[in-house]
Every structure is written in C-alpha cells, then in structure tokens.
Amino acid sequence: MTDPSTASTVTTAPEEFVTAAEHAEVKGNKPRSLASDAWHDLRRRPLFIVSAALILLVLLMAFWPSLFTSVDPNYAELGRSREGPSAAAWFGYDNQGYDLFSRTIYGSRASIIVGVAATLLTVLIGSTFGLLAGYYGGWLDGLMSRIADVFFGLPFVLGAIVILSSFRASGETSATQIIFLVVLSISILSWPVCMRIMRSAAIAAKQQDYVKAARALGASTSRIILRHMLPNAVAPVLVYATIALGAFIGAEATLSFLGIGLRAPVVSWGVMISDSRDVIRVAPHSLLFPAAFLTATVLAFVMLGDAVREALDPKAR
Image (cartoon, rainbow, N blue to C red):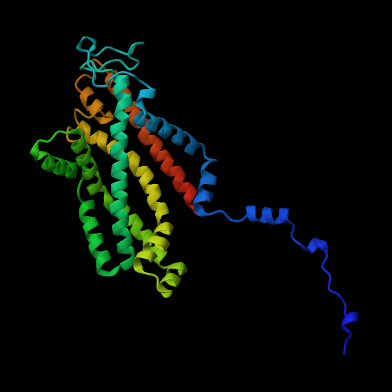
C-alpha cells in the first residue's frame, strides 16, 4: 500500500491558467449575431451613409418643418403668381401664389406618411399570409398563391383607379380619409410581392433543425412561427420593405399626378407636381423643385435597400 505522505503532488504551471484579461479578450471576440454583423458592415459602406443622411434630412423636414421655414404653406398671394426664385422665396411661387419652398418642406410629411403607412400595412398583410402559407403548406398554400396571382394580374394604375373611384363615391374630401384611401389602395395591390418573399423564407426556415427540435419538444404552432421562424425569415422582407418604401412614395406621386391620389387640402410632392403641369412652360420651377426632392428621396431609399441587402446576404460579400 502506498503511503499517502509520499504520494507525488500534481502541480499546474501558472501559464496553464487563463487570466482575467485573456478571458475578457476571448469573450469580446465571440461571433457577432446577424444583426450586429450587418450593422458593422453597413457602417463601412459609403452608399449607406449617403442614403441614410438624405433620409434623415427628409424625416426632419417631415416631422419638424418649422426648422426649415416659418411660412404658412397654405398662404397664397395671387400677386406673386409664377414668380421665380428670389431671396424672399428660394423656390419661387406657383400658379396660385403659394411659396414653393414652404410647400416642398411641408409636402414631405404627406409623402413620408403615405410611404411608411403603405409599407407597414403591406408587410403586415404579406408577412402574415406568407408565414401561414409557408408553415402549413398544402391547400392553404395553394389558396394563398392563387389569390396572390389574381392581384398580380391587376395593373397597378387600373386597380388604383377602381379602388379610389369606388371609395370616393360618397364625396368625402377630408385629408385623413384621402390619405387612408391611398394607403389602402397601394397596400391591396402590393402585398402579394411581400407574401411570396416571406413564403419562400418560411419554407426554408421550416426545414431547419431548430424548428424540428422545437416541434419535437412540444412547442405550440404560434411559438414556432413567432419565436423561431419569423426572426430567421424577416431579413429578405426587411430588404423589400426598405426598397418598397421609396417605390410607394413614387406611387403616391403618380396617383396624385393622375388626379386619383392625394389632392387639396393635402400638401404633398405629388400634388405639387400635378398642379404644375398646366404652367410648366411659363413656370418650370414649380415642377423642378418638388420633382427633385421626390427623385432624391426615392433614390435614397432604393440605395439604402441595396446596402441592406448586401449586408444581410453573406454570399454578396
């Protein structure tokens, strides 16, 4: 029998231990999540910085127009009708004597509200239908796909004319209802795109091991969809929403130009462009400035969407 007093003692060299500094360094270098990795990549892209700066400027104009002008956008001086840009009015006056600079600043509010509201409603409808179709499949997937095909076959302008003309039969002209009808018409005609994107992402997420493990552990359907599938399928929808926001702002201007979208008393870039079409030869500035702001805003959202798509897609790096 071995004497315990003579047993050899196992010693560990000091260099085999991990110090607190080394532990903190290892902890700080752990892999980033998809969102943090995308944000880290976005900050290095000049395209993202430029587009984000333009969008921030437009948002400031929309929510705090008093920072840029103190002129009432609804105050008209007929004596100054069609006057060009000057020190008193940087963008000049339109056909009715409205200050174009003030109306351009305040017009961003209605355009942004329509774009954001239409995007949120479109994403809500399309994502809900896409998640359900992708998760359940079968007859529900077939039904949702056929309904989406019907809406895909409707020309946007023709469908908007039918919807807006039908709901405006009562003759109501309040600004809130006009904006609501435009948002509703854009969302009804645009949700199938978001539905197909979410459906494809949901089908791919449903085949992953974490969803199968959650189902095997007895997780409810709502928990699987909301806690496991939705966070892993939302990236392509986020990219679509960013690009669609700019497209919907342009769609609002198109409908307003055709006389079926926003109209007075609402002030928006589309309404200003529509009002300038009769005097474009004698007062081109009445079209130039709102069209320039509209183009820059739509382009900024499209550039932002491209930057987000490349940041969220590892294959594009």
